[in-house]
Each structure stands twice: as structure tokens, then as C-alpha cells.
Image (tube, rainbow, N blue to C red; front, side, top):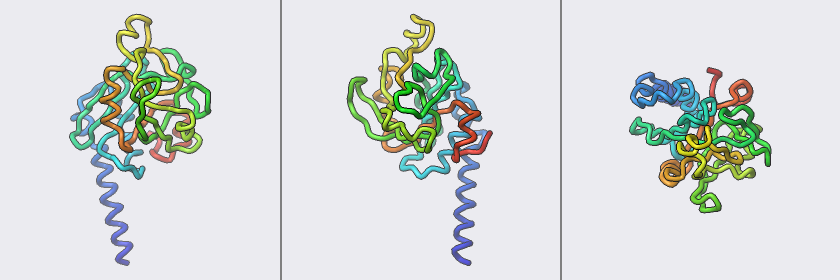
Amino acid sequence: MKKLILFISIFFVYNLSFSTFLDNDLYKRLNTPRLDKKVLNRALEGLSKIDIKNKEVLTIIDYTKSANEKRLFVIDLKKEKVIFDTYVSHGKNTGGEFAKTFSNNIDSLQSSVGFFKTSTTYTGRNGYSMRLDGLEKGINDNAMRRNIVIHGAKYATESYINKYGRLGRSWGCPAVPLNLSKDLINSIKGESIVYINGDLNNYQKKTKFYMNF
């Protein structure tokens, strides 16, 4: 009986904490109109269900937006502020200005959606980079084998958009502006969550991390 009462108490506190996450005031305090409220809530619900080391920072990539918009957001949940709000590329076979097709397949050169955790950092051909580990079987769990990483790129900048009409594309990695990449990676490394929003009709049928809203 005592164990049951303890379980109910923990469950209540857990759900109270989650409902606080979804409080409308949090969205208002973040004060970032480009960040869609529904996307934020999906990311927060998933975060509440994942056993992860660092729950104080959350990264959201919204691939439903044009590549010419700032669509990557790094949120400090403890301070309740957006610390990065910037451009991010999608895979070359995912689409042009808009991300349309997604894949978990090796050599697809497409982006994947869903929940990832940040993994190890390294310096390679794209400079300082960080591996992403996909947490959803059949959706993004090939991310490590596909070498999906966050890295900096000259083609992920506003100047590239101004010159060529749209942001450049990667081989499936979420590439960010080169001048921000090191600070951005360092702010989210150490096992935090990255939620990539997109392909909702298919993804919502498969994911276990949030309800369909």
C-alpha cells in the first residue's frame, strides 16, 4: 500500500512538472515568435518521457518551415530563454527550400525526424562537430551509422541565401552557420535532447514520445 501511494505521488509530481512545461506563460516568456507553440509542446512532452542526463537545455529544429527562415532553436529551460535562434540546413534529397521527404536509411542523403540525444564531439572534415544518436527505432535509429552530426557550414548562412536564393543543403546533417557552430555545440553537448519536427503525418503514427497534437 505504501509503495502504491509513493508511486501515485511520484506520478502526480511528474505530471505536474510536465503541465508546468506546457504552461502558456513559458511560451510567452521565451518571446520567440518564429518558434511554433505546438512544436514546442511536442518537444517538451517528449523530453518529459525520455531518461536523459541533461534536461536543462532543449534543441528544436522545425523542418516544416522554409530553409530561408531561422528554424533551429536552443532553449535554456532553467533560465527560460532562447539562447540560439538560427538557420539550419536539411539533406539534399529531402527537398529544396522546403523539407519534403525524410529517411532513416543509410546513404539516403535525407534528413531524419524525431528525438535524438547529443553524443560525442570531434573535429573532422567539417570542423568541430557533434554526433547525434537517434532514439526512435525505425525512425532515426540509424543516425550514428549514417554519421548524422551537427556541424558548421558556409552554406548555412544568410549570405548564402542572399546569393543563391535559398539555404544550402547537407548530406542529411543539420548544418548550422559556421560562426555559431562551436558555441552552439558546446551549449548542448553532454547528452541533451534534439527534437526535429517534420513529416508529421507519418511520424505521429509511429512515435511513442508524444500524443498527436
